[in-house]
Length: 150
Image 1 (cartoon, rainbow, N blue to C red):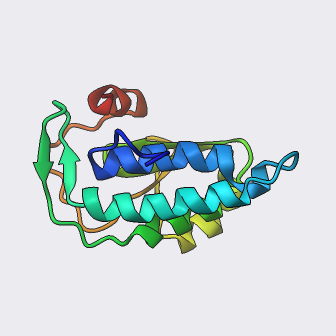
Image 2: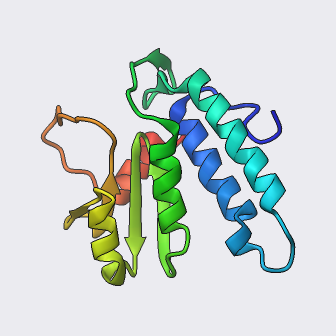
């Protein structure tokens, strides 16, 4: 593996994928042809996805098993659509994808991708599958980042 060698969990794979897409996507590289490298990376992502899709790490960085029904194309398609957004910050925090910044002009696209708006955090978020909040504490973005920083 060239791009995802040290990846052990789905979250790590998604973070690394996002980073590599920004480096290799042909639309972001007008000065050189990265199509072949991008396609190679996409194939590696699909292969690695099947290896790590059911593995996570909790906030204490302990690896655990959790069945995942997500397919590799779900995340790839979302990143493909949002990679062109200007003046936004795209973050993966835990199992959640967050988009903040100047997002108003992208609201309809984000809604169509099943993102939801968090008025407390002033950011859009996406999470595949169901989720039930266990605590009553509300965290801001800085607290979320600190909690899930690995």
